[in-house]
Image (tube, rainbow, N blue to C red; front, side, top):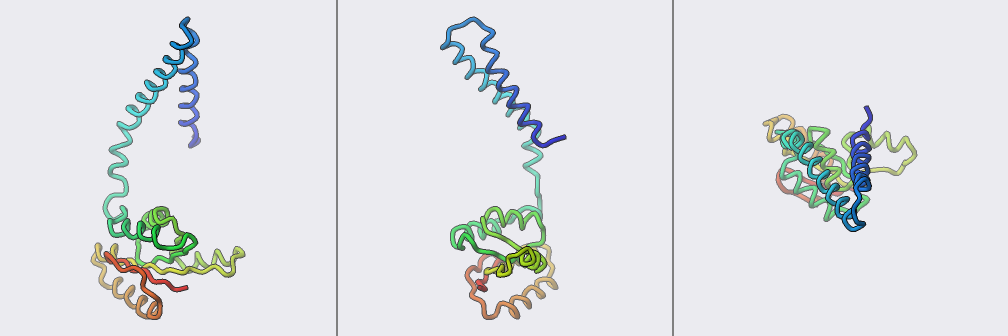
Length: 179
């Protein structure tokens, strides 16, 4: 099954519905009105049929810890407004890959979360590649009550980011400029 099937079939149906009006002997103005009416009726039925099942499914998607927190969302808005477009962020502490993808997309900034990602990119020819911002996100670990992991993250923050400039500190999320 291909992903494009539904859009292709819906497009064919829409064209077919608008062309059905040519089977009726009416004025040109009536045909234009019937085309619009057929399109509107099709869209209403399409949305009513698909939304009925889709809304409850999406409403509960990414529940609990898998959902981006308000603090993480606020950070992404700040990053979008305050970091340069070519900023590369390294993320410590955000525990799920889906959340990291949301942070990447919502902030519209490049995000790496492992040194192996940086090495991979450098091996592909971008030898100067490096991240210039480090995110320290305690929010997920605090939610889970993982005090040992919070202590480890604090140790990384103190040892590796002691000379870096802190540019954001809000809601258990800190951002340092490192380069």
